[in-house]
Length: 338
Image 1 (cartoon, rainbow, N blue to C red):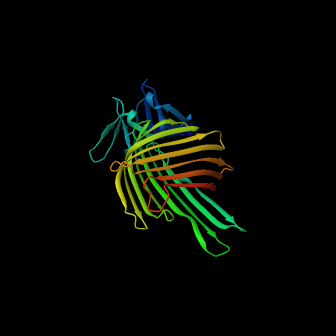
Image 2 (cartoon, rainbow, N blue to C red; image 1 turned 180 degrees about the vertical axis):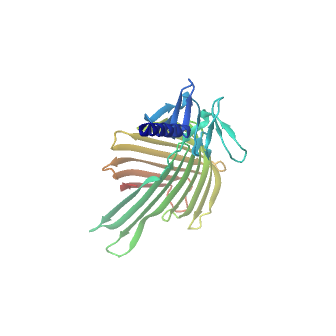
Image 3 (cartoon, rainbow, N blue to C red; image 1 turned 90 degrees about the horizontal axis):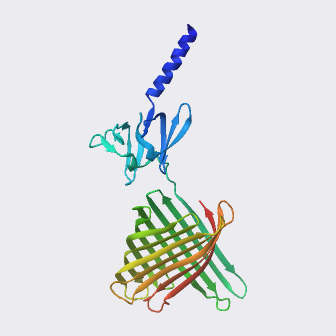
């Protein structure tokens, strides 16, 4: 009698668990009970009592239901956290909300319970000290941060360069470099290749008499290649260029086009090449244009540390009075991956 009671209790427990489980119904009529844990890259994962995690192609799912609220991320970027009910006609019913229950097609669901996305990035530092017949010092510092999801990318960068030279005969110390640049950029995916972007660049160059340059821009970009070993994209849009100077040169303020490309090429898991180019031709004054470009090598030394050599060139067709049009920097950095 005791054994029979234990068996009945076990059967009742299994039935209760199944009755309260999430359920996935396939297009062929098969059903799986368990706990829906995640969905991403077109695959849904359900943890079943008897087979553990089962991965199902989302294209084969007719409908599904949950007993607890889950987080849905739709392909348009909308996030919903609700309990989901099955719909016999296909898709799911999301219960509650301001407008009551709503129907969602399985094909409109991009992810279920997507993992939180952390910031990634690196910091870089370089210095050169020279003593003897020549006495000079220079330091440079940079930081790059990125927050990437399947739908958008937010990046931030900051770079600073300062250098001085000391005349041992006269004792006069002269600045040889004093400039910084920062860039904040947001990209929003439209489809697999096309994306929209908004960018804000701010810079200053004391030796070039540039007190402040502000260059916000927005437009569209296209990813021609987006492989781990080779990525190439182009961008086009409109920008507003504002330049203020320290030596009385009249400030510049006009609307420009912005035409850019970005390239990265990994030769192996240690060495990669990068190259970026941006062209800002004024639409108000044909002789005014600005070019920013850089190219360099990134070499991985350990899991966290790397070294980077790059050449940075800025060309301003109408610089401040007394300043050169071309400014070139050769930078060697030691970096740490965050």
